Length: 183
Image 1 (tube, helix red, strand yellow):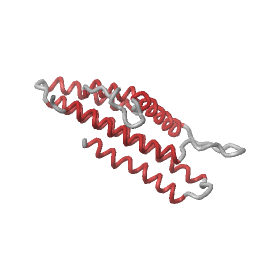
Image 2 (cartoon, rainbow, N blue to C red):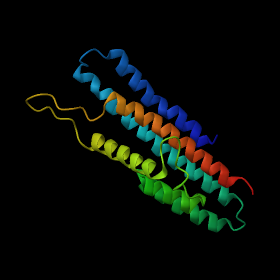
Image 3 (cartoon, rainbow, N blue to C red):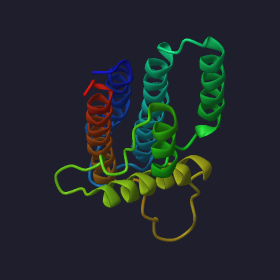
Image 4 (cartoon, rainbow, N blue to C red):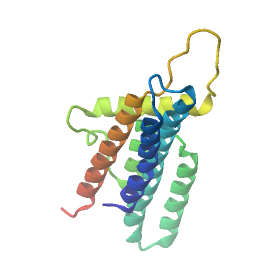
């Protein structure tokens, strides 16, 4: 397991803990003030993913750069990677795949697959979750007169996001480990 994976495992627990708090406080119907826990859980889950991508690409690039005889080339590449990481913010499927292609020399495109998830579905689902996170983060919830609006993040949504991200990290770890082993 990579150090990035270990950090992800700790970070995703924040989302799981928020979901557990929601469950403990839940009544039928759930009090409106408890809905914030699901939104916060989604944000924490996607933050765990973002942190994983940043840390994992740094690890993989560091391993590749370690063997360079010309340290100025390594410093140049590391500087470029640092700049890209600062601008990352939303590790969509395309951005993530490109980062790993460029800095780890691994194409994750076809490696992101498991159970009932083919690579295309994985990329689409990741992008949907990134968009949902953006919707939750960049728009405050407003109360409008009339019947209550559907909440942007359901309990089931958050459970699915957590399971999905765990599987995505596992698939990424396998892909990177296979590529880094000598042939």
